[in-house]
Image (cartoon, rainbow, N blue to C red; front, side, top):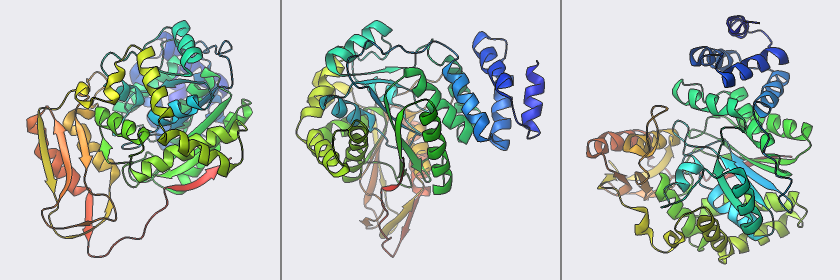
Length: 433
């Protein structure tokens, strides 16, 4: 079997067998398949897609490309939540500790930033001292003692995805349904949780631009999860606008902390409540409305924040960041972006907002580029709100003075202002169960 033939077969729209897919993932891990051939196959998949059988085979091959994370020693029901990626999406920072505070064990393996979207691990590493690279025994001990721990993807768990994840980020193949599904579900199934709740984004700030694509992704992932014997559901949520007001690593952690103090943005708080509620519902903790009420109370009354502090301390971080935001550090430069005319913010290109944040240093342009944890954007106005000419609509933060004006131009180009107020849009578009 030759990698050349596999690439050509998919380039020409052919169906890859389970054996061919495993040959690829095994070669990617052992080094016999070089990055340029892996990138070529990713591009062929991007253009020609995969059918459901191929996607399932790729998912299970990614899952089996390394060791499984053995969570059998975790005492209690295990749950995880995963997002397909969006702008300002920091829900794991609230949902994971909230679920843990309500008696569900959360042993979460998360990723780093991908293209214009932020990564949970990048956000957590903005906390001084926080360690996302824990040995497996320490990770499991944290979950048993605290109820929650969040680590980065280990070298031995789903290593094929780790290589593919980095390649996709720099070869413009991120937004491919088969690659999204196999990446997410390969990691989730390797971690072997009992419950999986998925947040499938839809809109300009997502890799899935239409409700139809988002639903197809959600249905595919839920189907694969069922085949693997998991309790699983998915929410399809709006990403035609950034989630909350903060975009960028430390800034998003601060907003998550504010939310756990009962003063978070309405849209972000709603989504955290619904994702936590979905976990509780699959765990048999009550009806939908009962689980929603339980989740809302836990997030707002301090229990989720207390659990978040415990997790930070258990993973070597400074829990005092929840009270003293100066411990995150501050960017050297700020820049106010002002509305060029009066009217309503009719719509935004959320991907453009993510790109503006990336220009400031909050994301990666190449696989080896480092992230500036203090860089990012705080929005002052969002879709549907009234602005006057000269009104500040966003404040930029960066240590790259030369990037401020280009970032501001990118953000303004992504903002549409009109005379008419747009109709409100639901945050939660659909559910797949």
